[in-house]
Length: 41
Image (cartoon, rainbow, N blue to C red; front, side, top):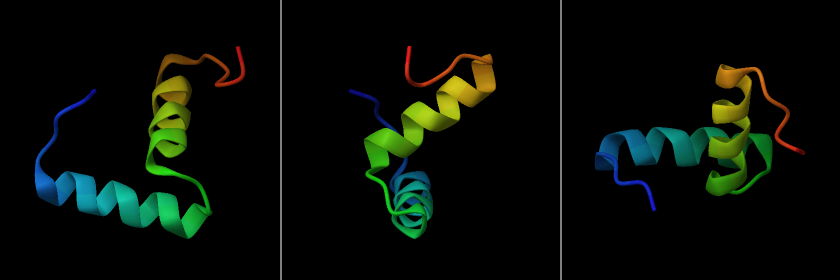
């Protein structure tokens, strides 16, 4: 579980929705991209 401010959660959830994925999938993508790792491994 990751705790974050409500405003940040709302912005990220909106971005995830615009990409057609869940918030969890979107966060996994962002974290994987930031670390240079594939989200699939």
